Length: 116
Image (spheres, rainbow, N blue to C red):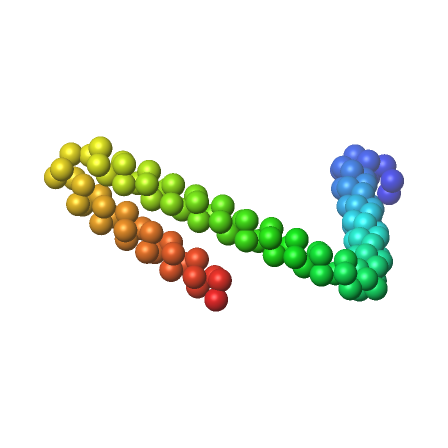
């Protein structure tokens, strides 16, 4: 039986299955450690109202900065698109502009659907 497995290659498959199970156990253990650390950190933060407020304020600043960064990127993209349109021949500007508007409307619609 062992010789058959060796000759047919089934031992290799069994070793792979064993290693895959081992990886699963390792990943599960890592997740358990992360959960314990999260619980420990949350308890420390909940015990200190001043620290909790400071963290909330920092997170708020962070998200506002991210929103401003995204807004700046949108404005730069709009300016780049307008510049690109201006570089086109006059007879193509309207057609390409309408295509761009349609594309942005579609993408914005998809984004809003995901967000809501």
